[in-house]
Structures are given as C-alpha cells and as structure tokens.
Length: 82
Image (cartoon, rainbow, N blue to C red; front, top):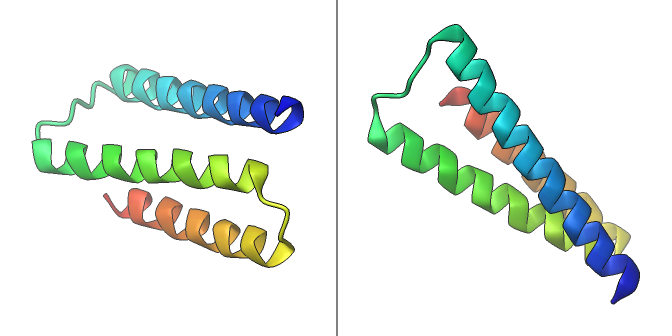
C-alpha cells in the first residue's frame, strides 16, 4: 500500500491546506457565513471532493480517472455557486 497510501495522505493534506486557505481568506475579507444550510452544503461538497480525490489516487483505469475529473469539476462548479 506504499504508493497508494502516500497519495491518499498527500491528497488529504492538500484538501486540509485548501480548506485552511479558504477559511483564512474568508476571515481576511471579514465574511462569516451566517447561513448554516449553505455551510452544510459546502462541507458536504468538500467531503465528496476529498473522497473523489482519494479514489483518483488509487484507481488504475483511465476511463474511471476521467469520470472522477469530470465529477471534481462539477463539485467545484457547485461549490462556486454557493
């Protein structure tokens, strides 16, 4: 599980770093989400993204990798709409 495990750890680290950067950006702008439903939806999308990145790190099929890339793009689009 060496390489696959390292990829998973790297993906999780990138996700945590990305989330921390977004939170810092919100705080810098002074924007605090007062809408718990929006926050819940955003967190759900972030969790889904983390799972897809994990799958992408371990999959061997190029067809599945492309499906995951498309799903990630869709999640990013949906998150941007929130």
